[in-house]
Image (cartoon, rainbow, N blue to C red; front, side, top):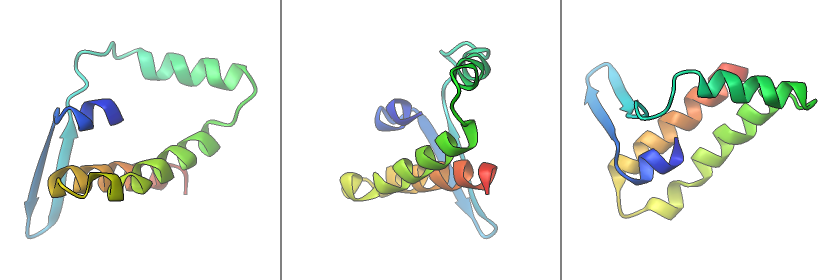
Length: 87
């Protein structure tokens, strides 16, 4: 997801109710994520722990993208989404 966000392949809309964002990953096969998750689990790693770390990494990228507020917002929202999946 990070590479797509850095390439500005996302939409972000804000209204009185909050934010709505989408990262355009349509060039990736829809089976890629589940296949990787399966391989990671079979290798003995905990997907929830990896998602937690991944969420923290997205949030930690905010200072590195100080010149693009819209990108900071989508990075933050992506991080929160990942954290909410496991908390």
